[in-house]
Image 1 (tube, helix red, strand yellow):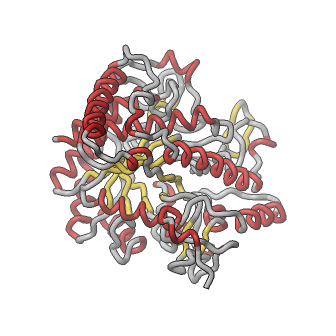
Image 2 (spheres, rainbow, N blue to C red):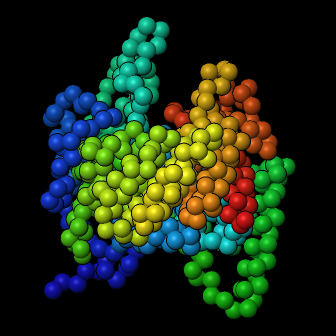
Image 3 (spheres, rainbow, N blue to C red):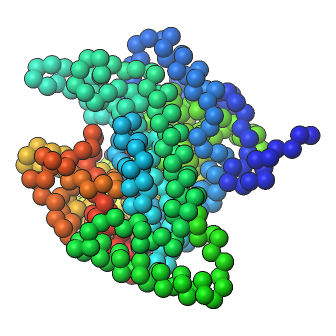
Length: 462
Ligand code: PEP
Ligand code: MN
């Protein structure tokens, strides 16, 4: 037998077969109700794009996905904390070295604050290298009497309000794959090549010290530095501190894309979507009998489901039965996004019903999507205080139920944008005109993200 060199390297656990996977049930979703999909016009263009993706190399590997599942299982038991962060919608133009490194650095900084402050291992994950498809509340958008298809994320169409740009173009799926590959390549280099070395905690602080979050971070970095120097002097081997695991996640909205990137793992013979490590189902597509839940029930990746304020306990229990019938640790994550005003009323019954069923999904808070408001000057925004209020409510509900608040999911960037209101160096509406960059939902900027990490650390330590 020819030996498989990849089996000696657990992070890349297995060789995967080339070409679109064939596996019983993988196409059942095609006969289910499906929402939020593009209407590709030209079948030949569509077939060509799917054929190209079907023979493309995997972006992530089965062994990595399995390691992530193990780490998420620890978070579900309260032994680790999941940090998911990144853009609402990635853009092709945004895949620059500077923007990617700023985002990775910010997530690493937030993780250091949480790890050091709460003495918990942090599972680091970007809404990155694949977050290109967006669900929309309307199929069309009208401006000045002109109606065009809505922007559905750059994997489907362009943001510019012209008929050419808004056309649903299947070739964009290939561009999304290529841009994801380039992004992931840089993320792997940053996190495996020494940039994530814990001895560089100071170097990640790109901010101005006058901001309270930055100076607080600098102080913590100083303490970590001293601890590291002490251990260094005492002869501890620091090889492991040079690298860190960093996983990718996106909403698995565009099933043509996910299906084309699904491969069979040669070790287990089971299907994995190789488009990203962690895939989630959005609030708008979590219909129990719909295509999204069906397709994701068939792949081995850890799966998240967003749960909004209308979620009933029986909905959560049915999702568990469908997506995690074996109750496999780390398989299923519920990402709750209830809204700051309603989380304390709506979340307890859901959490209690799941707890009483004996299931132990990972519970994560998304404090962004239930707290979107329109500012007086028309911009879509979120108030930092509402976001933190929802996080606080999430901790309170889980403390009361005796379950684990196991992670958070945030829309953030490493750049100094002005999209969310508030923070300790407050952003107000007048800053939007110059520094509002997002194409879809508003993100926390670098200092708001760091400030959030400090506040969550306090909640975690109580
Ligand atoms: C999102 O995460 O950008 C999103 C659309 O969320 P939700 O499905 O929770 O509305
Ligand atoms: Mn969003």
